[in-house]
Length: 230
Image (tube, helix red, strand yellow):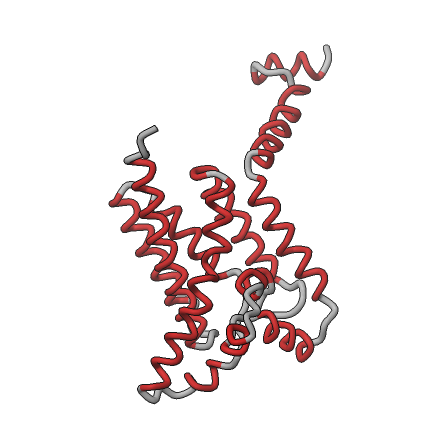
């Protein structure tokens, strides 16, 4: 009796067919999410390319690619894309791979619902709101004499966290209303619980990212509920 026969007797499906079927399903899932794959590869390649830099050199790179007043004055608009791909901390450490996992998971979920183009626009479009929004918020806080606001205005900030939060928020907005409320409650608790190690401007960025995702998600929900007439 062959292993295939034993598998057919025990499970009703030949053992030799089970693994290829899972591989095919995984391959189909990856092929259906090209934007997730391309974005994750971009984050990984950038991380590998910068992995050898020491902390001071890495911070100089962050300052160069971040959306700062100087970058906007000099019309370095490429920073609105680059800032999302360069993580805030140097090296290929646990935090880097945790963020990479969040990038893959969040984009894969939303891409499966709204398609490749829209998920790319949400992920990379977030920085077009988050970067300038952070500067505006810090400038307003500086006007009311909030400590550190003036210094942080010229300190670069980069990373994928705000874009990931925008994607997650847009995805949650596609849920039924009651589930979405629960989802945002969990997200709020998580943001508060993880806020301690960060500068306060990073929390501003996260809040702006969530707000952007909520607005985009509401637009996507309405588009799905009330499609444009053909």
